[in-house]
Image 1 (tube, rainbow, N blue to C red):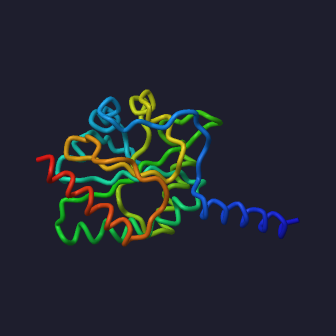
Image 2 (image 1 turned 180 degrees about the horizontal axis):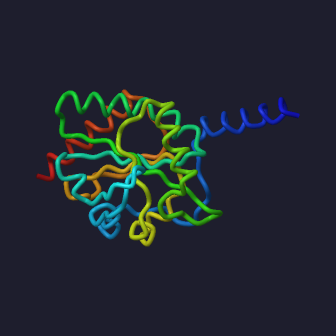
Length: 194
């Protein structure tokens, strides 16, 4: 029986890696100006319980916010790539930051914050992935926006110093090199808007 369970779990994980993790929704999410309050008015906490506001974006020209969940294989699988990027950008004193935003759901409803058990799981995943970049949680304010309609994990959003969107979302996991290309494109967009 145990072997069967491991086989089924392995198949589910493999399918998740091949396709990404998602749930169904009726309408696509609009990342236009009307949804700019998602991050431009951010008030939340990180996984360590520290208060985080929109000021977290102010020191960098561009921040990649990788929205993920603990039950998504591709989300967890790309964390070492994102960690390597984060370290590289930090060591080069670049104008790019990487943040995670962990989402947990209860049925069809996005949860606010994390339970102690979920927090422990996130920290365990971070430890196994050697991920040290900051992980944010969902606040009540964020949950009240269209952010609650995110259906694909992982999904990345890029914001400028003010938390305003830079380009469209990027759904799915990417390699370090793919992320670098996308980040370079978004940095050009930031520079052209200055």
